[in-house]
Length: 137
Image (cartoon, rainbow, N blue to C red; front, side, top):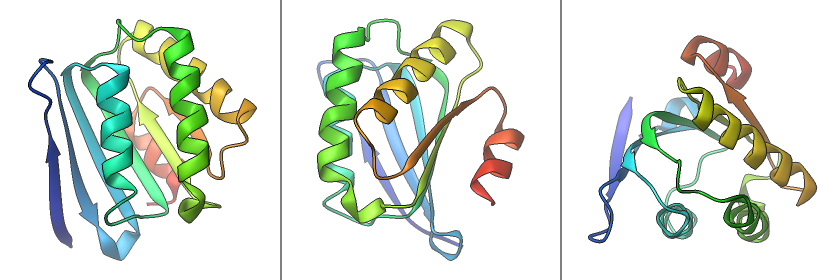
């Protein structure tokens, strides 16, 4: 059952981040399209943690351009998300990429998440089937 949607678009970028909630699965599905900056991700994360929170998040990053994200910005995102995401302790976040560059960026974020002792698990995947299996949905 889909209960609500959350769309987010910054005027200064070409990308969008939108979320759909499947409350019966305790799942948020986040779709990212176009060029996305670190500021976009941080702003969306801050907004998310002020609203409906689920223990499971599935990020569809297959239509996103993350090429502008630098490692220092990824680490900063992991640091900030670690501080504000206590409500998701024990949860899981899966990212799905179909581009080798974005997959590499995702693995880097995964490593930073572990270094920052994120209160939930983060994994990168190349297929939705694998990501959903890991999430248990």
